[in-house]
Length: 241
Ligand code: C5P
Image (cartoon, rainbow, N blue to C red; front, side):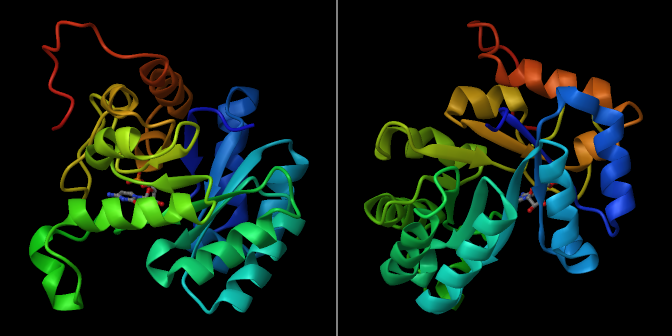
């Protein structure tokens, strides 16, 4: 069972990841393992988190032929992770292969990646994609839903319209989050947990705002509070900074 805040363990070693998990303690139940940590530390780091009782989002960003994607999803299921990602742009056969493989693992959810958050409208034509990020996201998210994916990964800006487009119950996992007061990093447009929650995100993925904070535990608690409900109805705060 994932908590609304999933902490991204973007580290270069298992020991750094476990040190952070120790700091956050039992309050933090959900972690994302991405390509860096997986490549550096191997599947053992995932097993260790699972053994500690943590829910693991394995961000494999699969974009392969269907049989290979199915094999990787099965391998993720065997590791005991609860979420795995596949690129929706791989097409319906790929997503259907992923969801069929995940069906063997009742707790495993397949999340579809639509358009990576670093791409902008002006960059889409050069890779042959249509006219705007929004149209491309809507098209792929709808396809992901039709193929049985359990959720999508989308920025807070996309969450608001995906919430109305997608069937109820589909997860919307939102990265690109920065906490109020956290130092600015390389993200161009970021949202707070409050804004993401209000926009329709069911979960947020937060890395550096928590892992690099002077007090990671306090940062985690503040993120969880942000996901607990919308900010005051006055709408005076500016969630996009
Ligand atoms: O920026 P932060 O350290 O919070 O990133 C945590 C994770 O969110 C990263 O592992 C990355 O995969 C994802 N991310 C993203 N789009 C962004 C920023 C981060 O997908 N704009």
